[in-house]
Length: 146
Image 1: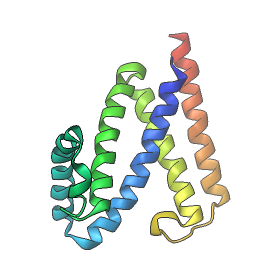
Image 2: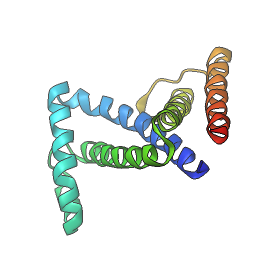
Image 3: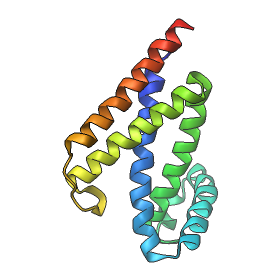
Image 4: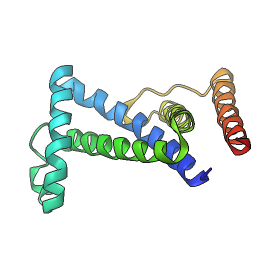
């Protein structure tokens, strides 16, 4: 089992948490369906523009930088998760992603990042995050014996 891909999957989970918060901010400017359509267009068109080196001059189109950041994060998340699944398997990859989401979400909430209200890290939240980490470690140990 490649520990780098586990760390990579945890990072992908972190990106999902950040992307979710950015999407929340974007959805305040557009309807939910408008945001989803806009981000999908950004993901499709954005890759073409980046490959031609022209993405920066289009940042003001389709909702501005936050929409573009979220769209590109979606592409990175999809590609990264697909690669992680091929190396780790579905259970290990998705478990690692969930741990990353929970850890990064706790950081975002605790410090009030990305426009979120501050929510202190309680004992129960700490214990639940710890239990998730233990679960991933157990999955790693079990995978090594297979």
